[in-house]
Image (cartoon, rainbow over all chains, first blue to last red; front, side, top):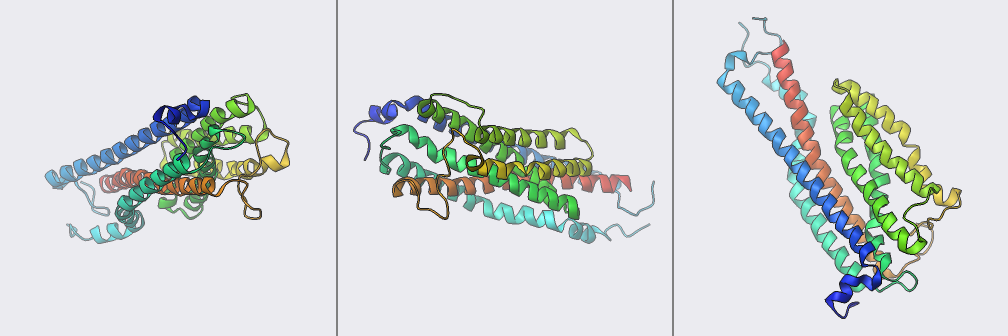
Length: 70
Length: 250
């Protein structure tokens, strides 16, 4: 164990600003990336669901490749 | 009249690769997140509570557990991105181009982390946040390359043209990666030499090395997880669009 007390741990031998500045920013950046990426995936899923619902409700507008134009 | 349900099977087959990726990545994701969390906690525990204080740098050296893995990831992810962009471009493989786009933001994130932690480490050990030496400058150029790739593929509306332009940029920019890696050997820089190499004994205590390698594995698992989530989102965005355009246009 390197640290006699919690305050010693947070002081990091006088380098607290640099060490916690590094780890703190990493925590923030990872949290932001995870949140943004999960949101993007949810939005993509919602868009697919909306399109499927649209095609289900309007089967006549869901045209097939190769069919004659209306 | 045509048979209304003649070609859904064909459509499914056409989209097989991205759809298969979507399913496989989805199954792997819980394991990847769990692995990243376990490895990350283990590396933090060893890095802060087991690894001793450094004789010359004091506790400031503990930044290494982020700095070195982030810098490795920044270079590795760029090469992987350029590889998939080139595959997508050369073979018209849609999943390759989508993979390249999914990797870019995570690569930029790790590059930014490497630069930021480098500045916070440089201040107490070198007395400066930043110097324009070969290692630091080439890593900054890597960050700009990621940003340029992201900006370029998003600036061109035609997806195939955007992928091709992005691939060209990514492949040309890949020459920067060996420049970063060998910069500390080719030029006199303030930055120290390689922390570990395959040919020499490690220049650090065993527990420090263990923490750093665990952190690196955690970064790998994290990168796989977050890139897979983003790639799945891109698959849905693109394939839905293509599906819809194909049906509406014909």
